[in-house]
Length: 349
Ligand code: COA
Image (cartoon, rainbow, N blue to C red):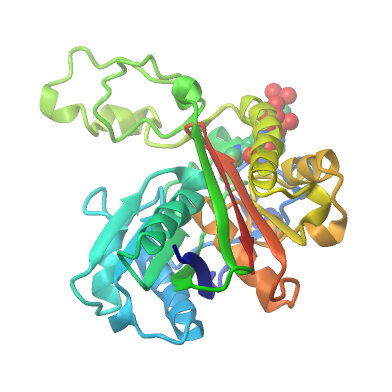
């Protein structure tokens, strides 16, 4: 059975740099608080009308496709991970198929938030291994800036997130010392409401979402997205940051160990760990727990914030572009986020 390898990788971040100080014009926050708690100095925000999740994905994908030595016409499947799609439906997969003028290939949308790219990579890996497809485009992209509460009320979330896109092309390889060795996916829906955007949705508060007013008297047609929801700021994400932090620092090391153990490696064997860029403090905790050196872990949240599904491919691409990942290196990708979902992938570059 062939393995799949990352044949090409690309990233795209918007030109607009938004510093912590820039945010103080919208909300009561400051550079010191943000840097101390998250490590973030700045993030990118997409152009309000010229850039969408799909257009950013297309730019990253074009680079990945070119670096893979192929063309958009040769791609035979798309897996697209995002929590900030251009439309509620259809998903971004078909939008990307159209934007890149691709053949009428299958396009799958993945909704696993911060773990989205690793879930997408794992799905694509299975299709390559079975021989079903030969050139799969796997994308993670987000335009968070359009959906954040940019007031003091939303500051605990809004300062964290940024926009961008990353993409890889997966192809089969017959080499025994190259490619994706394994992927591991997990979920625990017990805490689904802890990091979530409840609306628009069909729940009608069935699950008792926090910060959610009941709309028992609302006409049914207005339950999906009503004026009252907007008036009550219920169209923004909710996060219990401390609960997320506590779970993340347990699950990141656990899923990395799972990947290493499954392949007979130890943490000292890792050449490069690319953790999902949730929070620099989380990454530093994971690094210390695994006893990894600074050279073994790549972080760029300082400059892009948390770009959710895009964070792993953006960081992987940047580390590779800087020459920090070389042929034969053991690379570990790991993510944790809303759901909760968490995942890892171990690969030989
Ligand atoms: N600027 C200034 N003050 C802020 C602020 C901001 N952007 N956001 C919150 N605060 C204030 C709070 O209002 C609170 O004030 P109070 O003590 O007067 O009530 C104080 O700072 C502490 O808030 P708290 O939420 O307890 O801070 P924290 O130490 O837990 O840090 C996070 C908040 C979000 C940075 C932290 O919990 C975290 O990083 N969690 C993980 C989040 C994550 O990784 N999410 C992505 C998952 S993929």
